[in-house]
Length: 205
Image 1 (cartoon, rainbow, N blue to C red):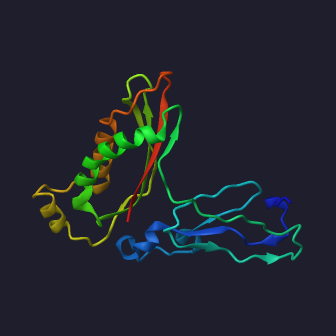
Image 2 (image 1 turned 135 degrees about the vertical axis):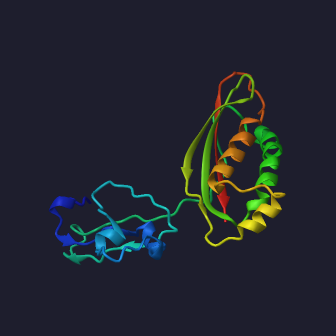
Image 3 (image 1 turned 90 degrees about the horizontal axis):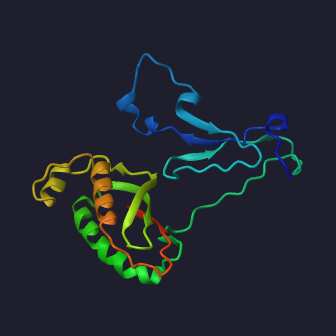
């Protein structure tokens, strides 16, 4: 079954995602500027063989479909959610062998981030390349970052938890702590000397 978007016999069907500015409407409000649908909602067409991925925290929906009732010419959608994020290894490094080093190395990270728990929300996914010869981290890349500060949090209380340190931008603080922690870990070496890759998700709720 194929949906030829340009020759479709129906209207609607686009994925609609509320634009971020609408969620904080009054901060960016301009009384002399009118707003229409295109300024409030992003509409994503659904041509054949397209994968649309977005942050589900944004209010979203699907524009009502009108037209043909023939299932051979209609809108067919496969909708799903990602599974619960978990560490994922690629390469010869055995995850069971790496678990102890990973858990031990991450302990300082959880301590460092304890003071900002509840002040930031979202998902941070990082990919690290691990040398098979030395076990050291040779490269680190951010794959996804949906972190946002929780609005109206008690910043003074957070700074008190951090022993009086003035909080920088929380996203930058998290990035720095994750980078410093992961690059300091030494993983087990492997006999072949081949490198491995760890994809590690961190969820802030």
